[in-house]
Length: 112
Length: 119
Image 1 (cartoon, helix red, strand yellow):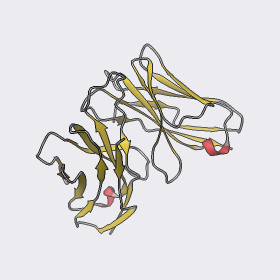
Image 2: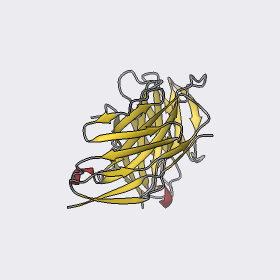
Image 3: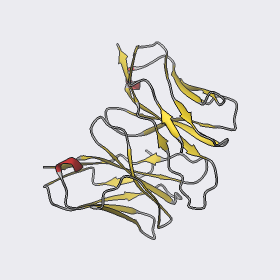
């Protein structure tokens, strides 16, 4: 158990809809990262938050947004969903320095 | 900018034998961390092993060990006594150790190597 909790595990929704993915980081970790992984692909970095503030942005679409709340949990909002958004979305958290990223089990999003 | 290269898209090994997965990276920094992550068919991302660049000793975790060659910028993963449960995608990752004002500690990832274990 990595200590990172992601909900829900699975989401099935229709094109054009909006969904929210939730992540609770490991206790004490201030950084939260969101990644997208399509089938048989590597990890695509979306965005990072550190203690409530955005720290880095990757290839995140304008239809996607995220935030980190004062209790350090984070949400990733995906709107105007398209078929190509179907993927596994990972949240990871870390401390600083040598601390590795610890991953949640992911949310599998299927857009029909 | 740092890059990480895994030149083997797929590797296979007979159960109980040893296999080595390659990873090379490019950086101008002297202090950094390197990681191997494993992603089995369940698609969980699991930390296998990590190495601090300032340590000369190669990291070891049970059957998993690394061959860290700092001058060559090489960080290979050796799996001994391969087991069926080792079948997975293996990702190599790099992280700067430089203290950053923007607190950006994200990892730079390789493309992954798919490891197949033959029974």
